[in-house]
Amino acid sequence: EEGAAVPPAAKSSWGPFLKSIASFNGDLASLTAPPFILSSTSLTEYSGYWAEHPELFIAPAKEKDAAKRALLVLKWFLSTLKQQYSSRNEKLGSEKKPLNPFLGELFLGVWKDESGVIGETKLISEQVSHHPPVTAYAIINEKYGVKLEGYNGQKASFSKGTINVKQVGHAIYHLKEFDEHYLITLPSLHIEGIVYGSPYVELNKSTTITSSSGYVATIDYSGKGWISGKKNSFTATLTKEGGKDVLYTIDGQWNDKFTVKDGKSKSEVDSYNAKITKTTPLYIAPIEEQDPLESRRAWQKVQDAIGRGDLETTGAEKSKIENEQREMRKREKEEGREWERRYFSRVEEDPVFTKLAAKREITAEADKTSGIWVFDEEKYKKLLASPAPSEES
Ligand code: CLR
Image (cartoon, rainbow, N blue to C red; front, top):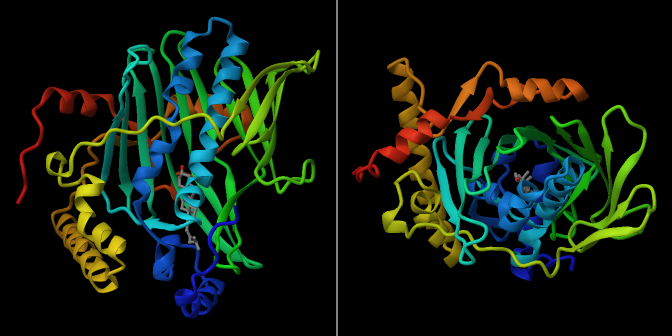
């Protein structure tokens, strides 16, 4: 469960790495991790974790009762945590260091729907800033009028053997039919198991989901819980703004089982088992059909080299991308322009965010994400209407 320990051949690189993080400056991208901890996945791909269960993502759209709808939004959110925070451990044996996306990098895909019931759910993820690294995303299901949009960056610090990561940014879940918005804050986290060479994520403190319909969900993360003693524990409540009563409570483990109980009668009304709920694979276009800015096409050579354990080529191919990027930034600066984001725009203010954030004293911290980012419907529609971009040489 704790993941693979440091492989014998890598032991020699782990000590120096531990020393280097002790004097770490907060920029995760600048961490030079030993090869066995490098993943070949770019951080732009992580946006997909929000909807690997499309059926849960759209479920609130089918619920007529406002309180139950808010509960379904909470349930969907909780169901994303396993993918977000423990899927690398499960698939790769430990937490890994992702590739640091370049400005303008895209990760596009779609969760197809064979059943014909859910409809297609589209993913658009774009790196909107490189210094500091910020990823923005939109996830859209047109059939049910469900849209999630958000952006996030990370602020990290090192203390007492762990890396503490604060997420900056937020997500907004939207239901068209009810014209409802839900503002979701992102959990802080820390990395455990570093000294043993088998890092994994544990969530800190709490997150909230504030809805325009007046419901508030609070999720408290207790880690290796003081309540149950189990990893990844949490308790959550759903309340109506202004009211004192807890409408529903949920508790359990986000990577395992949790149960939903009625706040008054305490009887179980629903449950979820993260271990047996299957994820829907994301469909991504074959590399040769991808745009040159799409993550897997752009990083292909680096990813292949990491897969082969070929450090020299990994470094060389990474440098190629970095140098090319540096050149582009230099040219833009000379010409007094800025890189045009393809799907997102920087705004002074997002009225939806401002309104919901005011209820809970949440701030945008725009200075840490090089602005407030919103999904730009105009740009999106234009792109849908125009033919695929032609090959650049
Ligand atoms: C990115 C946004 C996702 C949720 C998420 C999950 C895990 C986080 C990741 C975010 C950011 C990068 C991260 C990662 C865990 C480890 C990794 C903090 C917040 C760092 C860069 C790796 C450090 C190296 C150790 C493995 C030693 O929605």
